[in-house]
Image (cartoon, rainbow, N blue to C red; front, side, top):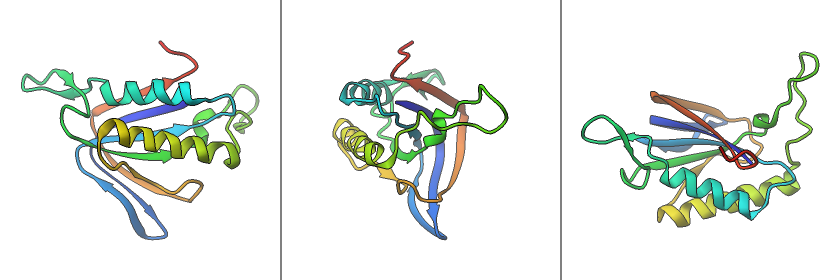
Length: 150
């Protein structure tokens, strides 16, 4: 499972000209699943996302987590995180899970985030054509891959 975290001052997701998710200070989390992903991948990523200290403290040092600032999260499914660009100029998405595998993983990921945060996590709609608007704060953008725990 791969994620891209973006620290945001604000973010929203629009589908068919309707805003379906909207937050102020928090995280926009893009998540891509592959068939080999399990509950262990979800557990590891949720633990990292909720505890990673990328928000500024009173001394302007990144020392606070999303939990510390009581920030909000939007999760957006993003199969293109598994793009392979090794051959040619057209990316291959062969490693990205098909919906029948990815949707339950995605839903479980969101539920686990909500449980860990103790509040609702906003989302886009899996597989929809989404317009994601964000104001990246910093900018701070971090990639994580549960198969490469560095």
